[in-house]
Image (cartoon, rainbow, N blue to C red; front, side, top):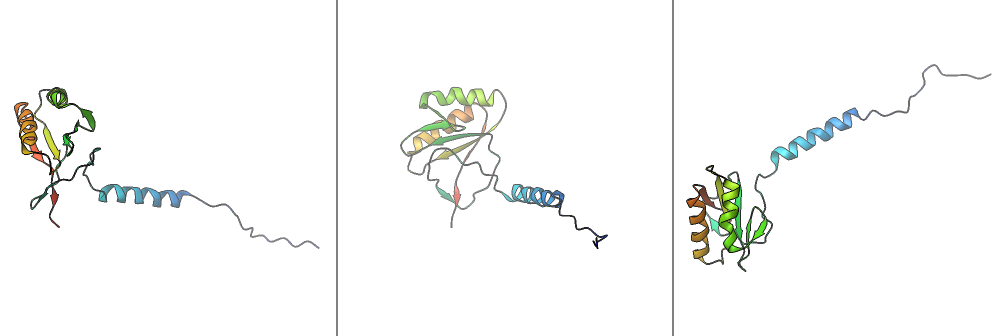
Length: 130
């Protein structure tokens, strides 16, 4: 005599609740992540008491061995003005200078002058005091 149960156990698993959890975690990490864009070249930023985070439209990076890059594209010193002119293209943009603290000030002044001549707002990236 074969006895059969009327309540069969179903062995399938629904992934809909798992995908909801994954999407919630993704949104959480996107909202809590930092909005600072790391530069491609290794630099040691100077420290400052007032270190505000701003949206970076255009970044100019100068390393201690005097390598120049505009938006992570390595360029020569003489090509910085033409690269900035193309990226700003007549609009008043924001240029953030990521300059190593061992670089002479003349390079900071030169690149800041170029950006200011193109009617851009210039700011210097710093790290906060610890």
